[in-house]
Length: 97
Image (cartoon, rainbow, N blue to C red; front, side, top):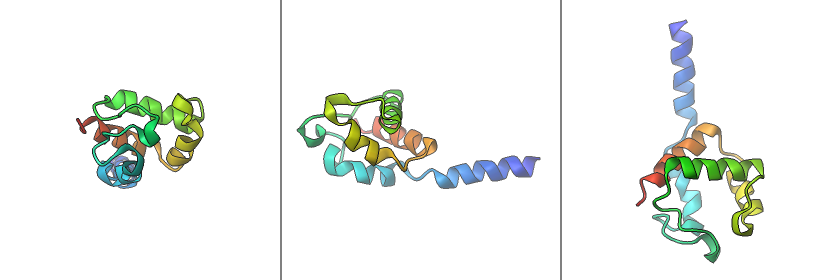
């Protein structure tokens, strides 16, 4: 049983990419340090808490968030992210202050 739990934990760690690597896709619009309003429309996300960012990412993925008309664009951007990836990304963005 311990081996199975360890294997599941290792698999989860390997599937969740590094936050910096995940953020590279975001940097084109949000800036290298999350300092830009994406496409001149969004809020600056630098300084957002991990919880706020995770909530936003989950909302975009579910199609229930459409802040400043960015819902469809962001839904496409986050579609391939797992829950673990979104958490890792949110934690990374929270450190970008």
